Length: 278
Image 1 (cartoon, rainbow, N blue to C red):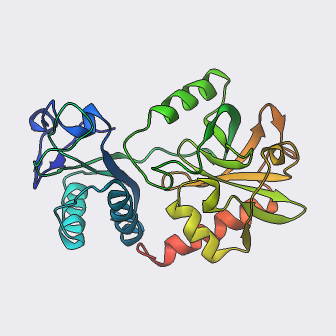
Image 2 (image 1 turned 180 degrees about the vertical axis):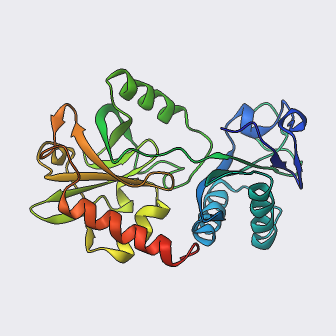
């Protein structure tokens, strides 16, 4: 993601000096939480919401965060200031710190790491596919943004093998859930719809903000809605609002962003123009 300076446990250091224990629980058992945010005008966008979700995820894991929000904000700002250039992608990670080789935690303090790098440009449209694996809407970590991403790695690799940039999951009830790193919206008969949090999807920050500024409805959606959606778009902190041109090989409309998608994108851009911490 970056070869520039990183923030680790209280200070900005060169990546060559950024070392963590081989016994860190984030490495050995995936015991950690994280947030990825973008900058807007070189400020972390929606950082208050990201920090709130970080703490909710940590609480769900029973993971301590040993810095308050002011300290984390300062650390993010210090990391951004250490990088020159344009807008950045910033990732804040907190792990259980060094611990036993098994699942039980030790008594070491958590590891806190912040890395940043250039924010990649996002194409106006993208291609997605559905995958055979499901999200468990009743899982112990449902709704938590944890570092245990192996399932997403597998699904995304499968999507890329099929020429897509994102994979979409159903849940165990056969309902549309989410992507590997995105929330999904569909437009059916002019109505903007998105799966509810009860589907097992992550409470995405961009999803949350978009629901506040556009007329969209949360509703359980059968996975076959992908076969009949008139429009579709993805949301995430680095994509913002991205139109889907093809799903499972089917072209949606004329392959260009539809009216509802364009309106949603414009509404979100207007929000970003007004404030960096909505």
